[in-house]
Image (cartoon, rainbow, N blue to C red):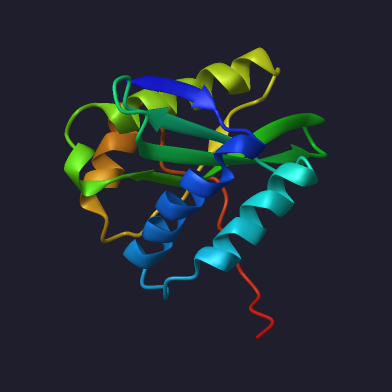
Amino acid sequence: MKIRQANYKDIAKLSEIFDAYRQFYGQNSNITGAIRFLQDRMEHGQSIIFLAEDSNSGEVSGFTQLYPVFSSISMQRSYILNDLYVKKEFRKQGIAKLLIAEAKTFTKTNSGKGLELSTSTHNKEARALYAQEGFEQETEFLTYFWKSV
């Protein structure tokens, strides 16, 4: 398994797994929208995407997407690990751990303060993985969200 940063040449195959990820979270399939969304993020330097490729076939088996954010208080950059997905047939092979490790390395290399993520309270497998990987549940701050629609 090879983990590497995605580029424009990867958009077509990346859009397929990105669409599967969105469907996993109850969204309708929209390959055209996925392509446009991923192209916009790359074109504007708004996210960093790492993909896991099968060393033999080149098939994309998983991906993670990071979004940079900044803290005024610490005057440092952090990254939001917004998306992490591994295709069902590739699960339980350590691919998610490899993707997280790559995200951590990228964060350290780029002098990031850390990685932030959120997941559903019902996603017990993901929560166990994140705890195992050293992520701690935030207890100091409450998160609020204003919905415009």
